[in-house]
Image 1 (spheres, helix red, strand yellow):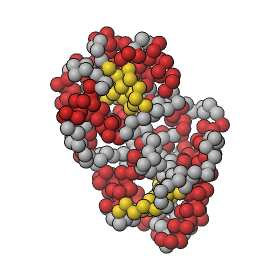
Image 2 (cartoon, one colour):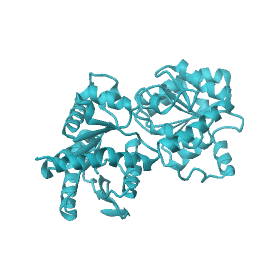
Image 3 (tube, rainbow, N blue to C red):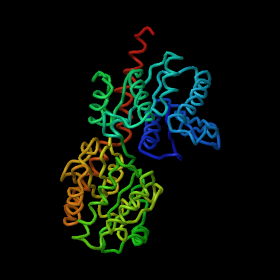
Image 4 (cartoon, one colour):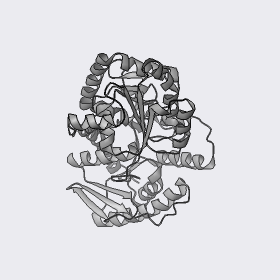
Length: 398
């Protein structure tokens, strides 16, 4: 398995996906070796389970001033070299599983060198992020080309939502029977690790006990729609003048979002907390009146599952995978994408009716536990994809 991220270096949903899927596969009897980059790792390998080993590739020598495509290319040369050594040590592999274009160079090279089938999970696409078939620059076009090539070279492609299945078929002209839909998941453990006193003290840092507390988290980029949420806040404050909004995350749009809050006159009601730990994210979900995810593009939206796990009422754009995870007025509240008026309506729908919101949150938590647990997802990955690929490869002349 090739991944650009693995704990403790996790930026987005891709890293969390691999961090949860790999141990679940190992527990289901699949022997997994993860090859992943990390600057100056404390060791070159970690045995996390009898069936799971992480092999760290030191990419500290890669020039950080180059663009992400060039950094990925240089890092992939190191990933390929480590995986080739590992191939000889282990005695070969039944398949390669790559996650997104960032490890695509090494994945394709290993496939061709060892005549080993390649499975690819596409977590998002460049054209989807830009919400356009016309890409704005050479960097995006190069990423798009690699995504297309990686999808073409794959024996099978995994998408995390029906929305993404349709997007991959449409953008890359993939046969529909080449793409499998297997959703992201969520680990349901450690939900009750915070005491009521600890949570009350934590909440008090951001809002008074009677004040509504609205929370949102994600990478601060345009497609996450935080600008829409900020534009919705004046309407929320008209009805709940003491409401507070906490935005967590970092990214290139941070300064622009802070300026927008100030220009709207709501900066006294908005706190930008920057990067937060998983523990603090979970504390916010535990104490927030609602969690809002106003994405313009969202292939899946694992963050919605994370909120649901803590019985936090969810307000989310009816876009991409979010619209598949949230059932309106049953497990959450859906809003129109890129629409501040609809966003404020969704927030007020929760704040005005806390009992109904709590009932939806309870239904959502039950749904997540039953449908999105990692054991179930690992079994689907093995049975639907891995076993099929290994069987077909054994019957095929390369």
